[in-house]
Image: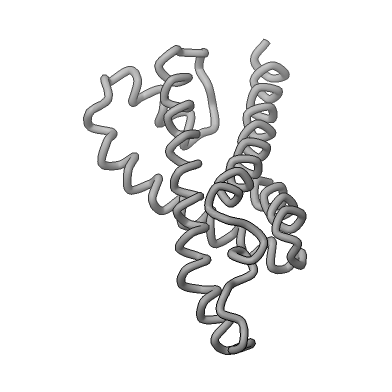
Length: 151
């Protein structure tokens, strides 16, 4: 679901084809997920037992046992961390992938599609918009699931 939402935002914001929007979303999300898994497994030992238990149940089973304040704080941290990592992923994508595409396809042009259409600040706004919309929709689905099945 997040790939679809984010690819649509990238497609409209960067004025690219739907196929390229999906590629951007997949690559950026894969980068963020790998980084998030590494950070989570390294930091998990520093969490108090109950916090780690709630978070692991939430992440692995997609199941809230209750609305714990520690899980809400960790979810906010997760949101902000992934936002930063997705932006860095977009910068890497722009730096490595699209520079190679330009050298192969159009040698007269030295800038990528992303560089032509936006600067770093605008790229951050676009990633923030895509991430916020997809994360909000995902949380709404989780909350609806909790509301429907547990109340």
